[in-house]
Image (cartoon, rainbow, N blue to C red):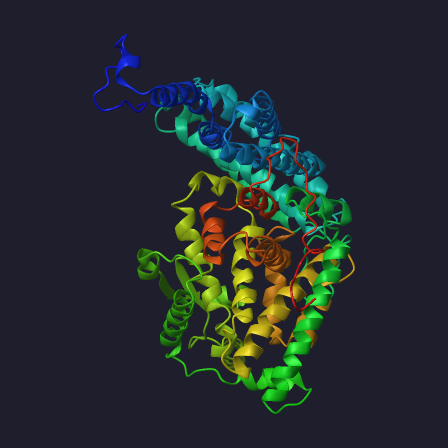
Length: 589
């Protein structure tokens, strides 16, 4: 409601007789401006509608390896881009203008990679050349159409023969030139099979005529599809990416795709420039590691110092207590210096659990968030696996990673993301997610968080690791480094246990991470550090306010976060231009 003076009747024709002129002008000013402010739009409704629309379409069109699906989802992106273009950018409030920028970027990015996926599907869609009648069957099922069961039984029998014939034909042909194509072909058949199975279940038992005619034809078709998709998954040879002895076979995406990925993340640097920066950061880490090594009495043999620190591991069974101590220590350090707001409930509700031996083979270190997953050996592991796990998760290495996973890192992030602009989770980016946790590793180093030379070795080990991730992952995607060379690099240059290095590289190239995920830690951290130089070190903003505002704006590209915090004009057609490395006032460059 608009403000109304206590005893003033706004309908009175004698307002000028009861109020001073200055107050009358103030009331009129408010009345004039109120419609202007109330007309300012947000994009909350549009963003929620977009998510709901996409979710609805994905529930409707369940065969995600079909032309129907690819074309319908592409139209969804196109429709929303057109709808966004019709919005009056100037009529949006500032937050909504920020949302407009990153929403349009996300739509453009998602459509681009969706179209790339469609192109990949077209390369293998010949393996489902028999699928037309089956697609007709499950699309008619959506309408509840009663099928001609006798005729459909004949169609299924005929299709089964086509599947078997194509299976035999492909057995004699050249295999796919990569495991990715073979897996995609197999997935396409699996997706088709699942949709046919669902449609069969819809009618079976409810339509007596359908059940009588279709039971055997369906079982025979289903059996042939199972054999066929199993064959396709193994029908490849690695002519594009060869096994270099590591057993890790990923898919380098190449320079052009890397540059496109960086563009969508608002990173105005080439892969080569980022590698050069990582090498500078790594060189600084080596210099500091030498200092810590000398403090420990190992001279310039810093790898010997790392070996010493690895052997400070704690006895089996005692590690969870130490994790709790390290978590509480980090929180106390932050609060003593009033560096960030930490809600009491966030401190109260983090939890821990042990990681399974199987999971530790993929991720040999902590995973975190509200629940910190502890990687430490179990009785089922071999002696070698136990020692590698304990040595790689010693207290001094972990002092840099417990706070990374909990507070002020991922747990505090997740807590705040659920409470501040939660709709922005749609725009989630690893440069904000992982960059924030890595930024704190740098910031805490600057604030003398490491108490001893052993602590310094532990924190430097992880910092070198983040630099190494940039170097080996970008070089891999540029096809300049193989998985085995990446493993050797982590062992020889960083000091990893070999099994841990193998798990790290496998996770990077065969896991579900995007090609930029591994570089996002250090690059995102450097972006936030550069932003701190601009806003905090310059005296424009208190440090605590800076940290709080980062979390209160949720997960958005850091270059866009810079616009938010700096107060600069939001431009509708903004493109990446922030050369954050050039102005980075960091002592180790």
